Length: 301
Image (cartoon, rainbow, N blue to C red):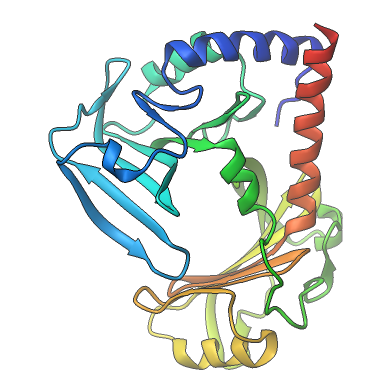
């Protein structure tokens, strides 16, 4: 991860505010503003996914202009919660589109966060977050994105994990030992996380076999562990094990077999493909640092 000086952040902030408006991403997307209801889209909208538990609805619309600044797109989806627009996802027709990345660098300046190995970048404007990876460009309401990082109500999570096995949240990579393999850097919740595998690992959770266990570090702090479930494993047994240990999930999508526990300091996610534990505290600390840098840069100006 490249570190950005306050001087560069100041320039980035000034350029981003003006140019984000030119790109129509400063407070929404095109003629849509964050918080607008689905009816603003037009009569051609199509609801294709709904999550009753969270009140989130995902729409596409017929005849949409599938391009962004001349870059071809394969799909645009609009995300609404409580009938208000909070995110837009633009799926690239050609992955790793260099043209789009160049446009964003020119218009928004240098990103606040960049991960060269995965090609992921994050820009922050006063009201929006602009995130680019190899597959898509994501636009988020900054207010709603920040809400995601802290639970809005008391959590059902009990016996919250303080790490995983012999690692505690915040431990450095060196705690993994020497028999490790660096597998790459991935953008997670807007921040670059370095992932490692242990060469000698117990690939089981109880009787449930795992394909691999990835240990993620943010700024050299153990922040997330991702366990890939072996295909054909007894998912219902793993689900029961987690329900017994951590309580009933705060959010669930039974149709997709997706379950989430959102504690004040930790989060747990379970799906058919895998299980993850995450230190919410470490990600919130990193977000606070980024916001303080941006505020300091603006004050200096």
